[in-house]
Amino acid sequence: MKHVQNLLERYWRPLDSGFRKFLLFVFGALVVLVIALASLSQPSGQVVTNQVWQPQPVSSAVATNGTKLTMKLIVHVVGAIKQPGVYEVESGARVMDAIFAAGGFLPAADQASINLARPLNDGEQIIVLSVGQSDDSEGTGKPNLVNPNTANASELDSLPGIGPTLAARIIDYRNSNGSFSSIADLAKVAGIGPNLISKIKALVTF
Image (cartoon, rainbow, N blue to C red; front, side, top):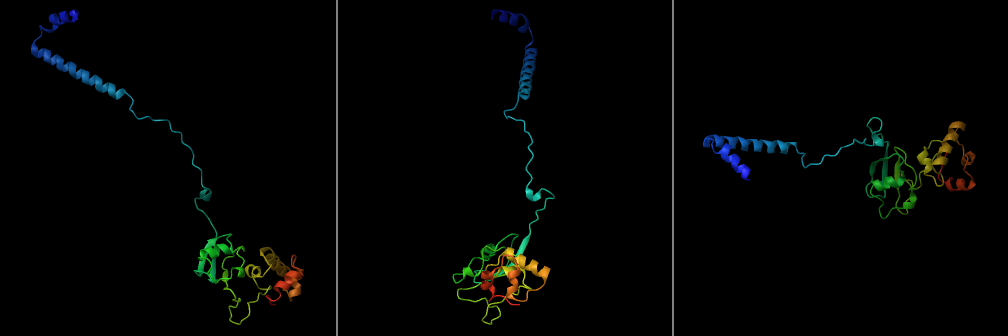
């Protein structure tokens, strides 16, 4: 401490007061500059972590050209349902999907009048009957008859006991062997026996 006082007495006090103020100003400016430079050289409080890019999974719907191609079916639902009309459903949909799209059954609907598990075909009409009502779109008092020689797969599938597989076999048989002339000819189709023929004989025509 005494050494510092000696230095002040020897070098500082003999200086002019104005010059001493100038030196103090320069020293203060240097201190401020050093502090400012030190603060800039310090890392900021924000922690930056190394980010590794991860490839995003490509959706299967846009894996090729960015366009999702989904087949649609157009069906017409009428009868004892809440909102009859034409509806668009996904490919592979079943009758129950079309009924759901149409708002569901009315209380008077005969739910056993249709096969809810049957796959849908594009352009078909689904008719939901009321309890006690017959399938009589012509007003004749008799159910509409299915002609195995002209019916499509959906119409054949509407027959009791004839599912999609047998409907396809009937169509394949007539394409290969010609028209059926009677109900007995249907027995020539693999899978159709006497019991099934007895169920559908009143529902077919030739």
